[in-house]
Length: 400
Image (cartoon, rainbow, N blue to C red):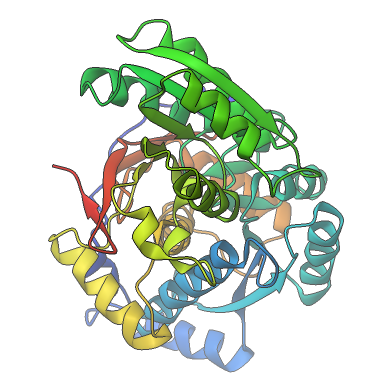
C-alpha cells in the first residue's frame, strides 16, 4: 500500500548513472557458494519476465516503437552485465494500436506468457484500462509515458516515469510566463482525450498567475481532428502570438500546416506529446522550426550518459531516440534498482514481487536519462525537473 510507503523515509541510495549500471553484474569477489548458486540458476533457466505494451502500428506508433526499443536496449545491457539479482531478463512487447480494449488483450497475452512486471502502457487511456487489470493481479507496473493522474491515482501498484498531466500544464504556463515567451496565448486541445484535457485544465488555472492572457481556447474531439481552420481563425483574430498545443504530434502537424496555409505564424509551444512531430510522414519538418516543448530528454545534451545512449540507440535502430525511448530505458533501470533493493527473485509470486518492489520504490533515488535523483511520492508520481527544448535546424535543441 502506498500509505505504507508514505511512512517510510525517502532515503537516497547511490546514484544510478548509466555507466555504473552498465557495469553492474556478478562481482569478481563472489564466493564459491554464490558462483555455484548462479550456475544452478542458469541451469534451471529461471528468468525475470518483463512485458511492455504500446502502439507499434497506427497514428501513435512513433511513441510505441520508441518505448519498445528503449526498453529492449536497457534489457540487453542489463543481461550483458549479469542481469537483475543474478537472473537474466526476458522481454516481450505487444502492440495495442493505441486502443484500450486491445491494450487489455495485450496484457492478458503477456500474462499467459508469464509476465511478472510491466513496462507500460505507452499512452494514458490504455494505461488506465490496463492498470485496472494489473491492480487486480497486484502486478508491478511502471508506465514510461502514461501521464494521466488516473493512471496511478486508484492503483497502488502503478508508477510513472513521465510527468503527470497537471505538472506539465503548470510547468508550461510557468515557463511561458517567467521567460516572457508571449503576451497573448491561444490553446487548441482535445477535449475527448484525458492527456490533452488534463494538461489544458491545469495550464488554464496556472495562467491566471502569469503575465500573459489566454485569448482563445478551442477544443476538438477524436471524431473531428483533421480540420482546425475555425480554431486557428479564432486565435488569429484574437491576436494570439503563441499557440499552446497540449496534444499529440499527428494533430499538431496538421495544425502547423493549416496555420502556414492561412499565413498565421504564432510561436507554437507544447508538451511531451509533440515529441515525434519531425517524424510524421509527408510532413514538411521546416514548418516545425522554432516549435518549443517541455520534455525531460534532449538527445543533443552533452552529458556522457545521454551521448552514450544516443549513439548506442542510433546504431541499433537507425534513428535518434526521442523522449519516449529515454523514458522506457529509464523505466527498465528503475525496475532493476527496485528489484535489487528488494531482493526479489523469479521464484517469487507476482504479488510478492509487487509488494517487495513497492516498498523499495519508497526508498530508491535514480539518476536516469530523463531526470536526476528521481524519486516517487506515495501516489506513484515521479519527482524530477522538466526541460525546455526548441526545434532548431530540424533537431531538438535543449534551451539552456
